Image (tube, rainbow, N blue to C red; front, side, top):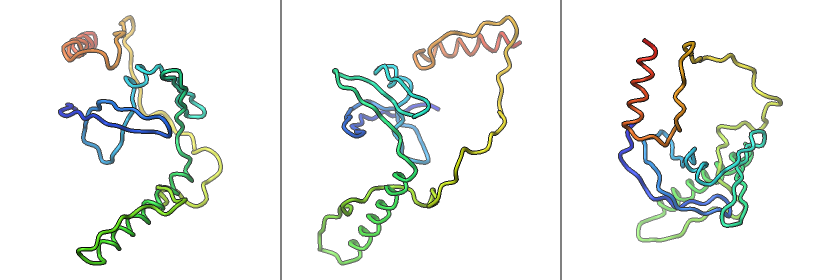
Length: 165
C-alpha cells in the first residue's frame, strides 16, 4: 500500500500528550496506530501479560494501558447517548443554537460488541494457520523492518526470490 498523505496529529492518552506526523492510509475504522517506529524512538517497553506500554520522556514516566471490556462498553453507551441528544437537538428547530456535552459520569464505549456477562476463561486454542518455509543453508536478510528505503527493499525482495529458485 502506498502512503500518499501524511498529517500532523496532536493526541493524548491520559496525561501523555504528543504531536507527531502520521501516515494516512485507507481503513474501515478511524485509528491512530503507534507502531514500531514510535516505540523505537521512545524506547518503549511492552509488558505482554498486562498489555501495558511504559516509557520515560523528559524524566517523566508514562504507562499506557488498554481499556477493559467494561470501560469500552461504557464509552460506547455514552457515545450513543450523545448521538441521540445531538439528533434530538437538530430536530428542535432551525435558528436555535445549543451546546451538547456528555452527561457527567458517562463514558464512550461499545455495548453492542460486549455482552453484559463476559464468559469465564480464555477462548479455545486454535491451530496455526500459516507457516514460513526456510531453505536450508540460506541466510535471512538481517535488516530493520521500517528503516530501509524503497530501493533497498526492492533489492532485498529480488535477492529473496533469487535464493528460492
